[in-house]
Amino acid sequence: MKFIKRIAIVLLIVLVGIQFVPTKGNQSDAIPITDFITVNNVPKTVNNNY
Image (tube, rainbow, N blue to C red):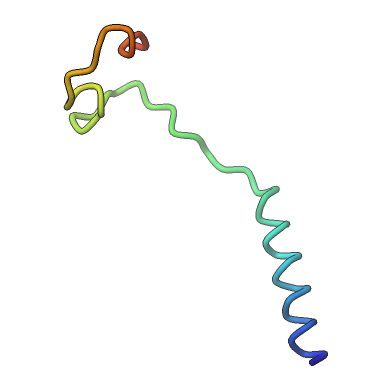
């Protein structure tokens, strides 16, 4: 039982530690052809970001 408890504690520490690793955000200016607003006919009130 001690072995399982140690594995659980290590796993918890790793999962919490992963939260502090920074990642690069997707900040692309290009609008892909598979974009929801491009593919679907959305109202103008929704499409105010472009």
